[in-house]
Length: 130
Image (tube, rainbow, N blue to C red; front, side, top):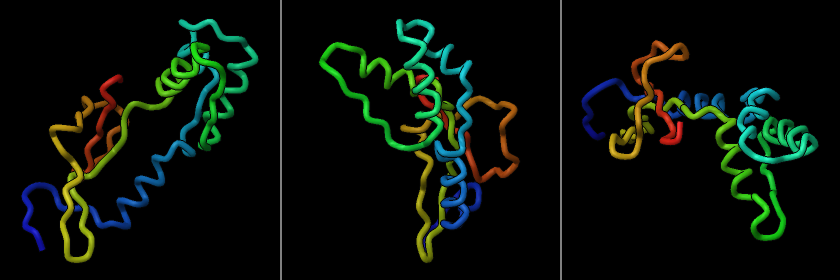
């Protein structure tokens, strides 16, 4: 077993539960948030009404059309509708192994806020665009 310093590692089962809890399928997408995210774009009301449920479904989306019609812009804007933070543990323990998850070079800790959990083994990480 590897030696570690810092908060106790999270068992693999707890890590899996947290990942499943944070899945997009558990995110409530509010119509006003969709409208706000798309307010800088010229899109039809019909498209916005279709996007909300599609985002909320948690399923894969297929955006198609000719070059230059805004597919990438729509995809990036959808990303702004979703939360820009996620909880990750410092490390996990898998039978016989300690695996570091948090990497200070690639993960950016979010400032303290209302949604924090009291378990010091977890860090709230933010998206660079948040």
